[in-house]
Length: 283
Length: 325
Image 1 (spheres, rainbow over the protein chains, first blue to last red):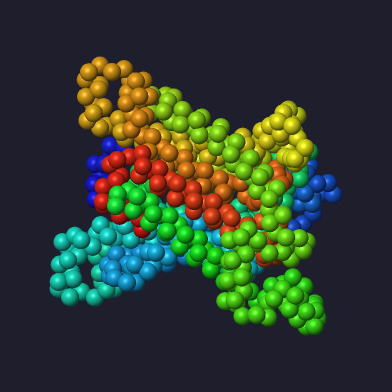
Image 2: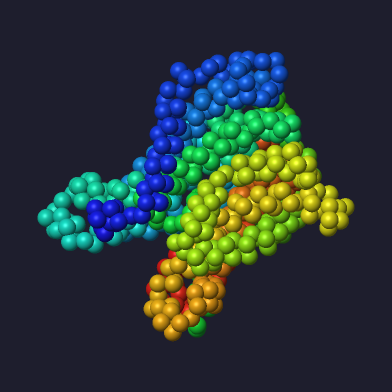
């Protein structure tokens, strides 16, 4: 509990506050763009604004055009919503699944706990992108399948964190007291354990969100994620990769957007200072 | 029997069990297809007769457990079946690609590991100072940056603007060492930046943690200079954890190569697998997935074994028990 003491927050150095502010500004801006994107675009993201591909920034298209002569900025803005919404949905799914099972495993223990823990061990010892590739090969890459795969793959990590956090709480006196007075499982879960692990789980959510963004972007970059004409940021890098040899910045902008968001999420997690482990990619 | 030996045997057995479960999952994954492999290979408009013919040819009319055992047996003998699209044996497709990916990952490891550990030690040496603060931010940023940003920027700068290096890393077995290293410089450089950040971060964290211990305080009181504290007293004690970090990051390369091989059109295993997924060439996907998972599981196993062998304190019963599961 010491991490949550108000004095500990005050004692944090200026650098951490500074990285928290930068991280929050970038994330807030991206979320606003994702929400209000359709009202901000200069052009229809699927319309051809120029007969030339890869024209540089100018008044026709502020960030230039893409490989088909469409407005890159408009596609980038529309892609923000797809990227963030997909990653958020996957992370949300991962946390619902992982937190519930992890905390239940910590409270109940027993055979179910042992069984899920072993299964999670297997999932965690596999490279996530390869799991993603096998699933896409077998089931295709519809939006719901992508979200489900990312959700299940990252739920294994969430389970382990939630179970470890929960295991520290269930041995405390107030939980034993609650059990002794005959409280039922839902109360133990939501009333006693969850409030005490909510903050570290929220931190984990931010970190896991950055993993999910990288995972989805990688799949789309490989051409196995979101399918054209829609494109998330990873897909935009792929589409415009051919312009690189002509010196076009078109693939750089979406890659920068991914980097800005994932680095900001890591800055936020770092400044909250409750990192469970040092991983920054989670692939 | 020696408890460390028991631990090693248990971990080896566990790795075997994990790979067996992976083989079940990979096989089952391709069984739950809507339709089956023959249907997928021939596409939506195939006649029922041609699907049935291909099914017989591939032996798909036999029950699934029998086919699973055949597949498993073949794989243990190095026979991964035939590719659906090219009809050539999968093992022949794999051999050259496997070598190329080995070269890529191997040279990245040789360059990235000393570089990153050196950087991490220097950050620990001047911890809290200007160098450490700047390097910490750079390293955090690098370790959270996707490969495609580093890769595309590198191509733009070194291949397009400066024209020093080729943008496409299309290696040929006929290349001599000079040509090969020139071609590999950009992909290896990209992967190095990707893994070095993480290793440097963890080196710094491990060493600065250790610098708080009583024996270091004792050394400070004796008047040992700070560089000697970091490079001698601390370094010897973190060899175990560092070797562990290195093995985990080399395992990360399994994922890293997938994107980097695509950016540079490098003819490696990962691109073979991505193309196979695109073409839904399932025998090839299965073989690639098994090899990638095996490499990953073995590297993580190596990481755990190194942690135990290099650090006598990790050999207590409770620690061994924790790592055994």
